[in-house]
Length: 231
Image (cartoon, rainbow, N blue to C red; front, side):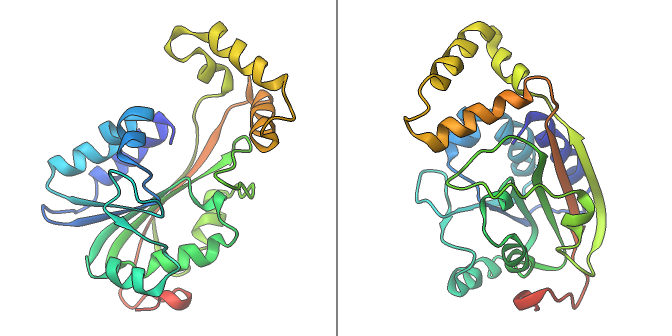
């Protein structure tokens, strides 16, 4: 998640009618260390304000690691039932759909996890390098294409925002030349972990091109139905 992306998500959430005690499901949360150390802006800008407002955040992921509250696969009906029991008013899914072979099925499954009148906030890169985790299908939707995955839902906010490039990433922490040297060293070894090498090589195309991220906030109407997620 880009820092600019986290800030925009936080701004949108701050305008929602979420009261103390409301539940937010964070799908594809990764670990606490990732949210607080690797990308500290995620917790600082997005989840800390929710906690301060009394919103209960449930971090959900496939991997059983510290900071994951509920481990499981959203495609598993039993796991979805556990998530539905929270009666969530907000679901966040950030930068996950591009790593799935069937993003529409995943969106449909997530749609059934929020209460009628609840919100889904979802982000996906729209112009970004190849980054397998463990795969990257290069799914890069526009806001309109992402909104089509939630037919009949009310669009609250939709935006394709520009947020940085690879040159700025290398310069982070004032260590451009050190980071650039490490990257070039990695590029010199294409046969070591070739998929990761391809990701490194692809990032060079974004030295000056700007990253873009699609953000969408939608509201579930009463009686909404989306595939198997009809409630």
